[in-house]
Amino acid sequence: MKTKKVLIAASAILMMSTFCLFAQSIKGATMKYELKKLNYDYNALEPAIDAKTVEIHYSKHHATYLAKLNAALESVPSFNAPPTVEELIQNLDKVPESILTAVRNNGGGVWNHTFYWDSFTPNKTTPDDQLMKQINASFGSFENFKKEFTDTAVGFFGSGWVWLCQDESGKLIIVKSFNQDSPIMGEKIGFAKMNPIFCLDIWEHAYYLKYQNKRPEYIAAIWDIIDYNELSKRLK
Ligand SMILES: [Fe+2]
Image 1 (cartoon, rainbow, N blue to C red):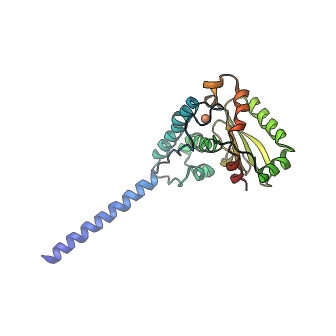
Image 2 (image 1 turned 90 degrees about the horizontal axis):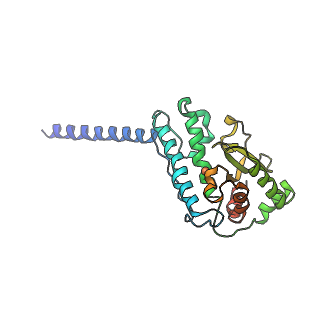
Image 3 (image 1 turned 45 degrees about the vertical axis):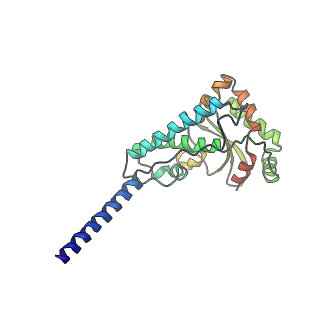
């Protein structure tokens, strides 16, 4: 009788272990990414970017990209997505064809917006010596950089992003991406290898509530809320 009880207990333990392993494998296959919290309140970037725009942009647009990304990944449970969205969109060549467009659009939407929010601060900052040295070496002066970035953003036709990136030689360059494409997606979408330092969302949803058709005013307003300390940390 005692042997029988031991056998039953051992079987139960084995079944529990098997179930746990199975549950872990399911969890891994359908891992959900989460929305990174903002570093500041919705109204913290006023007057450059108003509270309502930040709230809707973050809690509706950004959150929707995340929900759609997670839904796409859940539709292919056999695909073992990497732990971060960054790694996911840096490796689009590993994404199943059936969800490639969804991952490109929504994964880009998630990562780009997180990078965008983290580029701003309500605390006034200025470029440190290292960042200023890089800007001067690449553009001649801060004013030249600002003008080139502004001209690119004002003249952008359609929806997308303007980026300050570091190319492989370390030089700072200004780059455009359409829709939710991101420079970190690399060769898969035709970008050379580069390191993003700053980005500006120039989809209308980023500024229309406050600025309507006056995109140049939105672009002119963001220079005072850039977190130059964060930009310096991104330099390689
Ligand atoms: Fe956006």
